[in-house]
Length: 43
Image (tube, rainbow, N blue to C red; front, side):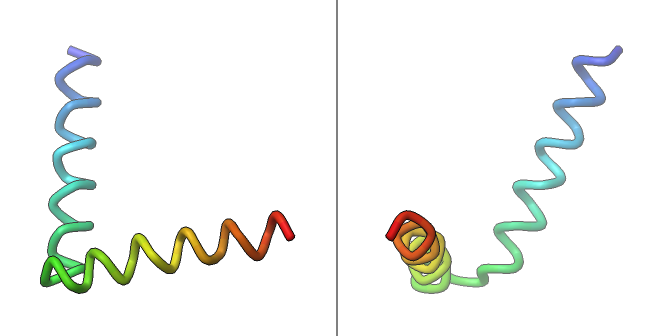
């Protein structure tokens, strides 16, 4: 039961994330911005 609930939450999160990006290009920009933020935090 708990495993099914966690799976449903994970699928929902992926679906929301995918619709927020809209395109592969948008996904690339999102990943790049996360990388840049990590670089700024380290330096």
